[in-house]
Amino acid sequence: MSDANLDPEDNKIIVLARSARARNGTAEGAAVRDETGRTYAATNVALPSLTLSALQVAVAMAVSSGAESLEAAALVTAGEGPSPADERAVRDLGGERLLVAGPDGTPRQS
Image (cartoon, rainbow, N blue to C red; front, side):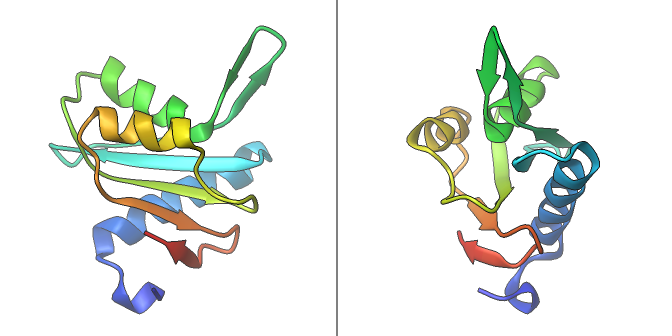
C-alpha cells in the first residue's frame, strides 16, 4: 500500500500518529477516528505503575470522550506492529481498519 492509495482521512490519522510520536520522542504513536469523524492521537505510556501502548491510550481517549465506535486506527512504530492486545482494543469498538506505518509514515500493512 502506498500513500497514493490511502484515503485522505486515513492518511490524516497516520500523520497525527507520526506527529504525536515525534513530539514526545516515544516508541509509538497512534491515532483513531471515531464514528463522528473526531480524531484522538496518543503515544505509549511507560510509567512504573502503568504501561499502555499508544493504541490503547488512543482508544481509551476516544471511549472517555463518548465514542461508540471506531472507523479507523493507525499505529506508527519502528517495531513489529500492533500487539494482539492492541488489535483487541481496536476491535472492542468495532474498528476493522488498522493501519500500520513506519516512523517515516510509509504504510506497512492495513
